[in-house]
Length: 327
Picture 1 (cartoon, helix red, strand yellow):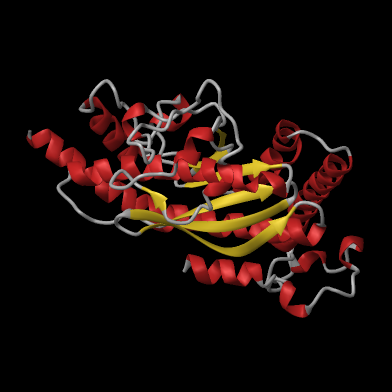
Picture 2 (picture 1 turned 30 degrees about the vertical axis):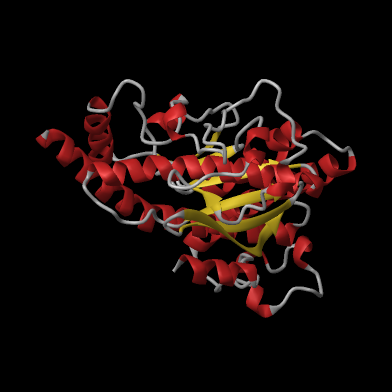
């Protein structure tokens, strides 16, 4: 379902609100009929909906303006995150009460979940004399898991990823998480791979790394690889606690270079993690069409989080918790 939804978005199908057909921003010969969503039934509800759509459009237009300005002014990654990426993520996620966008650039991987280098040493979360000169030797494909090794290039990683989409657990899952964490060692009181508090008790299935130029993509690949490998190690440890041998669910991973957003998938291939990079462009923030495409893509990912990831995570955590209670 997710792949089908994202394929539709990648093809720019049904990404534009039909109620805004006459808006000046959409008087463009490049617009095709398939780009419009299904027309809604007129009436009071439609009028209210149009007002909401106009408010959303004005907000998106403001983000596009900030994105173009950030590019022209050569703003820093931190400025892009503040002025462009955070607003567009929060806007797209806002209609999903069960989800939240969390800035996580300060999060560090717990030692127990850090991937290993070829020498057998743990990858440091923030090495004191980090450099990015060796990052190009890691492509993001075939990344190591706890059962394999990562390239020594991972030692160059000096920070992790920028954002996560996290679940706001409902009462049943929240109680389950509480019971599970009460029975975890003091060294790993978390459902993720970090004890950064916003992620400690809230499952996070989507990670986003941002850069300001394509020249930094090798570094971004390394950072995403290390972070995702650590997340896989935590998920596998929870699966093992429940006596299972199941593979970890395939998760979406997002890379952002300036205004352009692309999507990959992290696949559990047993002895390694494969980053499936089909160069899937899911939108951009420097055009009104691109930002509507991006909003549709994030909505599809949010639906997947609620409909697929949450049940999967709840099941594996329940099995682990039952096993811990029986000990």
